[in-house]
Length: 280
Ligand code: NDP
Image (cartoon, rainbow, N blue to C red; front, side):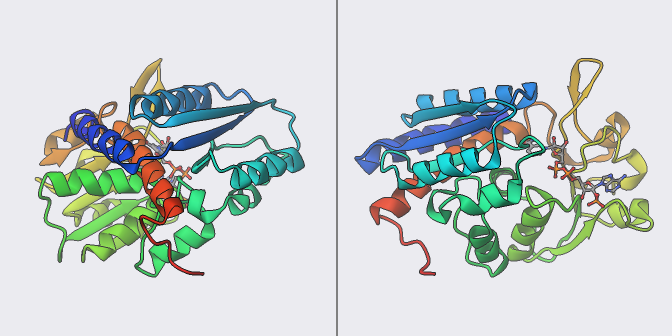
């Protein structure tokens, strides 16, 4: 499954929607500290925004910034009419409580979809701003006509960012979903039942050939650096057993950025009233 090509299509669609909106869209990015991977991610998100006609409003804070200062910045961004979306790049330095910062973002500007209001609405089956990686995975599955209704889906990983929300989205598409994690007993046997297997672990070779049912659809979310190379969570020999699979790089990664842009336009539409955000 070519995530790069699909992401290019989504980005074109988003650019057209952004132009149609008739008012500026501004994505504020907040980067705290000097994690090199975070710098790379934020740079690509900002570039993608500008290409889609979305204004990028960037704030970079030092590694020793206090939680109060980050919360004050988020409050300013919530109140700023030019800012229609807010993204605080994770992870944050240890002195800052990430959950508290996420909860401070106005739900209607929460383009990462991590705020408890948006996460809760997803849980209840009324999705608003979806976390980008799970949304990208669902778009890849839909584009490739992967049958989900009645299918066995196994998700390895239970993070709030990937594992849990993608499990809910698969459930909404009527898959029978099993969520696995580090304490799952007999992971090999559970995974081998999957028609659709999502690996969101963050360990190279977490999914081996014996864990993949021949012909299954395998989504490799992992991004791991091994000897200076980017690899996913799915071992090389497992990739041969799969029917459809996402490459790393060039699979889920580009879709994540495309879906972030989609959310940014959606958030702006909520703010203009073109779309109604659920009343709280
Ligand atoms: P987390 O570290 O938050 O979660 C990892 C999950 O994997 C946990 O639920 C953990 O279980 C589980 N796990 C760890 N070891 C095992 C094991 N041996 N067997 C079974 N389960 C295990 O990671 P994220 O969800 O944030 O990210 C996962 C991966 O996806 C990372 O490589 C990350 O870089 C990548 N990623 C890629 C994105 C993209 O755009 N392509 C976007 C976001 C993430 P437990 O809960 O029990 O600890």
